[in-house]
Amino acid sequence: MTKMYKLLFLSILMMSTMISISAYSWLGMWIGLEINLMSIIPIIQEKSILSSEASIKYFITQAIASTIIMMTIIMMMWKSNFLSLVNFDSIMLMIMNSSLMLKMGMAPLHFWFPEVLEGLNWNNCLLMLTWQKITPMVLIMYNTELNLFMSTVIISSMIISGLMSMNQVSIRKIMAYSSINHMGWMLSTMIIEKSIWMIYFIIYSMITINITLMMKNIFYLNQLFPNISISPSMKMFFMLNFMSLSGMPPFLGFLPKWLTIQSMILNNMYLLSIIMILFTLIMIYVYMRIAMTTLILVSSQMNWTLKINLKINKMSISMMNFFSMTSLIIVTVGFNLS
Image (cartoon, rainbow, N blue to C red; front, side, top):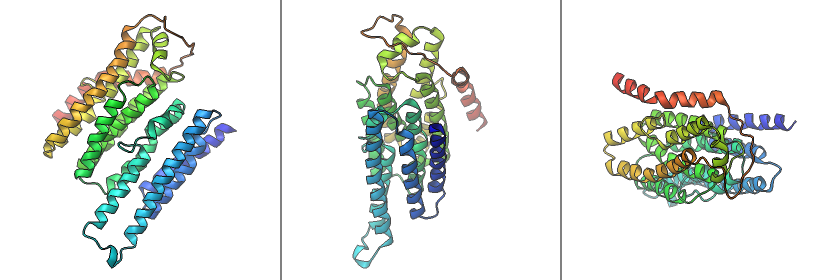
């Protein structure tokens, strides 16, 4: 019965996303966001204290963001002579974009995002990292342009995600800061070319799905070594996924970053692209630290060990391995055709 309830709320969640991104008015968009919030709370609610705490934090944060969105909608509709300032609409849109960034946990409004993910299981983390980003990103895409505010948000996402993920031992928090880093890249693609954002989001979602399928009951770095070190092939699959997530050239994750950098250079955004590349190198260091230590360490004698039955979807990992190894050929052929 519990699974039926979860399936019901999941279908309502997907429907609410469609309502928001296809709404003709800001009020319809706001209604879709509220339905989304009311449907995801029962999904992430589990029989544990951590999930209850995470759901309360998520609810409070989303309620504050929804209140700010509703306030800006009312202020834009109620424009009297007293409020007819020079840049009133642009200020209101900036406040609305800030509240949408708060909803999806983008820096510098990211304070709730790693803490909420820390209290969820991997299925709910996958939902937070992928599906819950669609509505705020599409709504930001409707009214965004390159200005000082957007550039500040992108640069802060790069800096905060790189620095905050360096000393983390929780894989869920590392994935949260990785999501913040990728959201900075996606925001830059939304400003330039909407189709590149779609390619980026689809590829990021594919890689995240494969990583979460591999984790199951593993939540910390020191749980990886006694489990994945048993199988050399599993270590290789794990390393391939993280190298693809980092965006290294032979792998599939390099394709959207390549497209983003090329489009930014064509639009004369040299300084922003250089800053993004430099601070993404810190995230690549974090990924490679996880991947290389998992590949190199073969001893299972740790401070403590945890026996975990690691069940992995072999078809999904094989698919990811195929895409990772053949992506360089796909990218090369595609650019030659274009």
